[in-house]
Picture 1 (cartoon, helix red, strand yellow):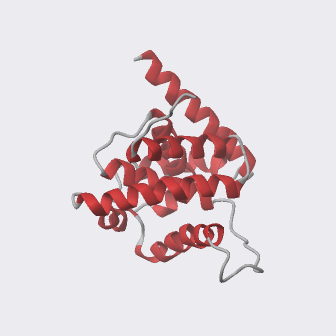
Picture 2 (cartoon, helix red, strand yellow; picture 1 turned 90 degrees about the vertical axis):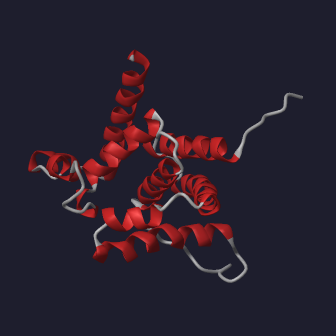
Length: 181
């Protein structure tokens, strides 16, 4: 039997990329969330252990103060539900379809804060996320003016499945661009 080896950061990278591919293929949202939650936990723990990552403070600089609680509530609600059954075994979980998108974006930022360059798949996802969600960005964010342009409203007004198709196209372009370099 062949052994498969990995370290923590490589495992997290693989999980992040897998979650992105699953998202843009419109796969099961709860499975996607379980994968990205595992990656998030790894990068968050590595961030705390390294002592050199100030991602939480960096996030505060990117997310509007009145949106921060909403952002963290979306991320933690499903993660805790899908991880445990002891205290809520008979409860139903209901979350918005954008939950995984926020979770993936924060995990990509944590990954980068550890000193690793985002992969082409992560960069493609982050470009798509900023395009679709400019309201989460502060005015001082360098590319906010570009993604906030009203000519992009056509993309923001698309049904969710069409937004995911757009994301898949952006992802393919990001990968192709890397291969041509």
